[in-house]
Image 1 (cartoon, rainbow over the protein chains, first blue to last red):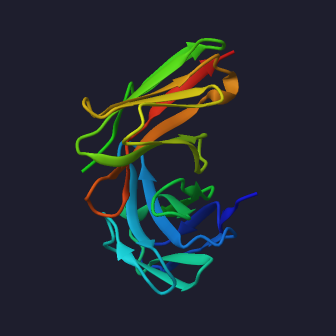
Image 2: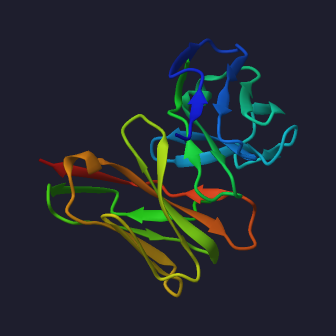
Length: 112
Length: 112
């Protein structure tokens, strides 16, 4: 079965901390995505990657960076966490562009 | 800006009834996808319909696409309590930026 695994289900961090959210897929997909989901705002694209060491900004990249050193792993980094980054973070991967994305279970991040 | 907008925002029905959710979008698209999200979990891809298709079926799901009205509908027949979830449409804009844009979702409750 296809699998996208996010390292943490729940995470609590302090303001100013550097936070790493890890995502691993086992489907040999080229494309990987990071979204955040907030009530009333839906899903918003933070960053995406179509290849190893490649990254593209989404709609809301400010305050975030990403790393893709290996095809199966796409990391989201919050350089200095702030309370407005409290959110559900969803990682996804896909084989063909944006068609049929497979999502991880999500990481609910709370920044205090 | 959001491309897809679902309607209604919330829908409550009895088991066995049909559920219809609608999605409207603003610009020309390559395809439109529907996803399901169980509470607090990741999204699951349900069905993709391309811009040159008018109707598609998958099990108890029926999706229609009307490109002249820039709208799509998702019909779930003979609903079950397990269908309780949020449903999102996502559009891949033609000639636009390379990303999938999600609507805010319809929250469906199926009462046993």
